[in-house]
Image (cartoon, rainbow, N blue to C red):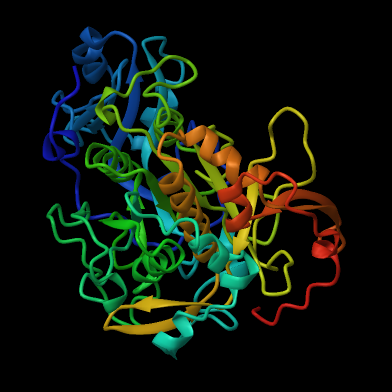
Length: 459
């Protein structure tokens, strides 16, 4: 059976690899080369018969006592016994691929904030490229963001302000004392340092992602002003987290009353465990029957940033079309797709339209540490706009479930279905509209001009 409690579930190592991420072409069964973007000497795998664990540990030179486990059938996190083998975790995962006792074997993958500097798969909008970020905006500018009228937020606030809903922000932590969050926080957790203080750690200019979590949470607070924010720190000062840490954080959010989870991080390959856990967030189990009783009775909608590669290459978890999750791309003030935003191609039959929604994500003014404000751009800024709108709907209709909430935002947005000349392919998505979402208006209009020449100066 699964272990209860945060420390027994995780027992994670706080140190993660800090190297910049290259473009990856491996499959989930790694090639055997040394992994530069994962926790060293750790493997994660699902075991059909738990009684086989001692034999499996012996076969693959793993330390017998698991570092953690989750789900039924159980997924284990285990350490390689480096005193017995010189094989890397990647080589062990590759060997596990032919073992019938084992499924879904993978390394403990690092995931990163999608605006983190040096990511080859997101160079369209790295925080240190082009316009990047700008400190110096004001509280007045924060309360008069251009996107509010674009998504008809003032009209929506006449119906709902998000009261009674909790949005968990899984990120770099936040400035707990920022005036933007006064009276709006519930208890959070720091999964990097394993304590109850999810404050951001870092220094401006030294750590390019410093302020990311505060900025994201500030957008939620602006969009859904009476919703509660649950700050959960899963990314370190360099914007890096890992698969097991994220898994533990989502479970913690569910156990502590979150309704919506915002994740503005990703990876260009699809981690098995994260896909399964998100799949289970609406009813406690995956489509193939794996149970996550650790989630309890609470159900979660997951809002994920689509990535900033400016192409149609999926970034995960946003790249998974799973019923309780919605992947969110970025739009600009001209109601066009941001030049950096990931967006899938066209109206693909069979449910492959993984980025189902876009939301304003350019030139967004929000909070940063030190009671200051800044203007940043990225799909990380679009996701919390969508999460905030979801909170408005959830507050107005408390009984709506995660899958229905995802469909609501998609079905009630302004339709974008046109040929995107700048990229040479069709797109089919919708731009979120808060007022239509609250009224369940599925005829909110269309914007064929979304694919015309992009006038954005946010490059």
